[in-house]
Every structure is written in structure tokens, then in C-alpha cells.
Image 1 (cartoon, helix red, strand yellow):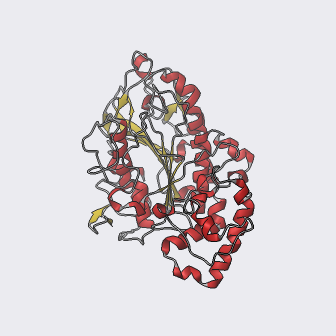
Image 2 (tube, rainbow, N blue to C red; image 1 turned 135 degrees about the vertical axis):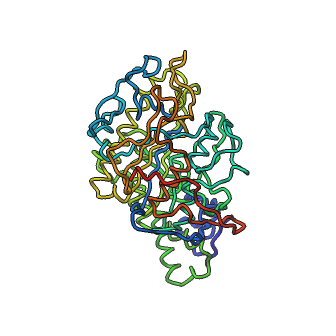
Image 3 (cartoon, one colour; image 1 turned 30 degrees about the horizontal axis):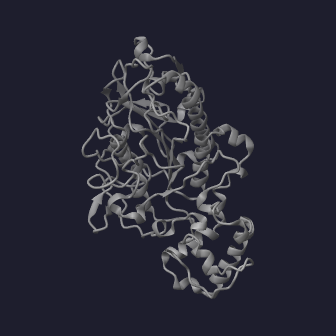
Length: 467
């Protein structure tokens, strides 16, 4: 348990500072400090050159479950009904570039997009293909459903690599995941979401939250319900006392006796910039409405605020609530695909995604913020007997925007039925290489594992056509 020693000065409820901090080992703020605050200095050499490195931050929108390419980025209007599906394509603000009719807001932002229409993992299992997309390394073995973290599949996630390379800034970690981990229907957590062989100190911070819930409460900056209110009074009074005490501790020079973890804990709790990043209620109501009042929409808005506060990489996973149906949860539309797309999936995605691009652009942040929209795979070309599509890792789509990306284009193409790459094939490691490239890191940049062995951050090739 993490504890801080002091002179035992009591708070107004009679609790000493030491006793209060022992409540959950700073767990009163839900910080999990022993695991989260073991920040290490950057160990990797970076290679910067002109022509890349325009992005200061990256937001990854991960649509877990696998959206159908036919009804999103790669419509096939001239195919039979069982291939093209129920929805028609619409024109965008880029001549010749079309998307699904359920994406009207995104269509008006197409001049900012580079759509990749020939992404391929060749893996049809959620967790193993997801591992490939999140790390740039194929799972061993491939097509392994309900896979769990652990060797030999312990390559670090994109966020973990960024955290190791960037270090910590502004009182917040360099990489954050929200609003929860990605998991399968059986509850097993996908591999590829942590730091793997880099060690726990490089894990992206996980902020488990429901930002559309009123009032929005982030566990990492809130008191849990099980802490009696009679002991701690209300949160605002307690935080004020804690901040006063922290100021006094800092003036005495006592912080010099604490290790780096402790000092970062103090910095995090005291930093107004860190705390304000989570104050969604400070956003104008019109802005919150523009993103959509659903959990995904407000998570995307929270990602924008975190980037503004100094976080380098924020991964927003599609929200999987407790009411998701087991036979077609999230984007895993094995059944009733058209109904799910029309009522549950595409409208909130279209609203939040387009709002993010528009918001970043108006704030002058899009050129320095890479936005990546991706998933673990796509869906099969032919609609099945249950009115859905099945897993398909042979070809699917992703989209890039900002951070130096050349908008208004589609790169690569699937075949006539949208089943296999026709040209411009992109593999997951190429996508990770492109993300690192945008953030200013050459593919040969090295990181070191816990045994101090040097390893390249990616084995992929940068998608030059996207720039």
C-alpha cells in the first residue's frame, strides 16, 4: 500500500493526514498510484526530420466489434442486395468520394480525411486481430478468439510506446484510455492494451468512466461511495483542505524526501489544469450537444479536452454498456445489421466524429492532432441469414485526419464485392508506423524492455500516400 508520512496533523473531522491517505492508498481518488505513477524517463532515441512530425497529439477512436466497410467508408452500390446492404452512398464535399448515407455530418468533413480502404489483418477473431491493430504485431497464433494478455503476445500498445517515448507532461500521463478496456462477451480482456514487455510503468492510464452520465464523475478524481460522508464531509471541502495541506508540505521542503511517484501524485492532485480537463460541465451546452449526449460522444469530447491539457495520445473505445445484446454487441453486427446501424451505431458515431474534426479545426488544433478511426476488422461481404455480417479481417477501412495528413482522398481499394484488397493494401504495422511518423518518431526508433534490450517501435512502412 502506498502511504505518505507526515507529522500527523488532523483534518477537521479528526482524521490525520496519514490516516486519510491510507484510505485505499490514495484510493480515495481512485488513482492506483503504485501501478500508474512509476514514470520513467524517456529511454528511446528519437529521430526527427523535416517532412514529418507535425502532430503533437493523437486521438484514436476504436470502434470495437468491427464496422461493416460496405455501410461506412466503402459503399458498393453496384453489387447485389445481399452485398451492398440496405443503405445508399452519398456524395461528400470531395468530388468522387462517397460514404454511407448514414454519415451525413462526416460527409461534410471529407476534405479533412484520408480514407484507407484496403486495410487487412487476415485475422477473423476479435481479440487476436485487435491485438494486431493495437500493437502492429500479429498475434501468435492468429484467429484466436477470447485471447488474453501474456507472452508471447506481450508487445506494447501504441499508447504504451508513446508513454515511454514522451514521458509525463502537465501533471497528466502521456497516454490515456477511456472510457473502459476492450473486452469480449465472456468478459476476457483483449491483449495489446497494456505496456507488455515495457513493464507496468508504461501502461496507458485507464480512466473508467461514463461521461454522459449526470453528474459526470471520474473515479480517478472522485471519492468512492463506500467512503462514509460523515468521515470525509463533502468532496469540495476535503479537496480544499488537501490542497492547503499540500501547499504547506511543499513549503517545508518535505517533498524532497519522497520518490518520484509520490511527487507526481502530489502534482496530479494539485494541478488545476489536470483537474479542469475533466470538467465537461464547463463546455457550452451547444458543444456538448454537437458531440452527442451519449457515452461515446461525450468520451470523444473528453478526449479533445485531454489533448488540450497536454495528453499526447488518447484512445477512446466504443462504449460497451451493460445493456448491449450478446448476439450483436457494439459493432459486432452478426444479426439485424441494418437496424443496429440506423438506430444505435452510425448516428452517434457520425455526430461525435464529425464534431471532433470540426471542433479541432476551428480551434486551430487539427494540424497538430492526428485523429485515427479504426477497428479490429471489418465485416463479410455477404449478408447472412440473420440479416447481419460476420467477422472479416481480409479487407476493411480506416480513416486518418489532421497531424499532417492530406485530406480529401481515399487510398487503396477493395475488390468489386468489398471482400479483398485490390490495390494499396495496408497492414496494421503500417498504420502504427504512420501514427509514430506523424508524432515525430522514425520507424527505427528504439525502446528498451525491462531487461534493457533495444527494440524498434514498429516493423511497418509509413503510408506515404496519406501525406
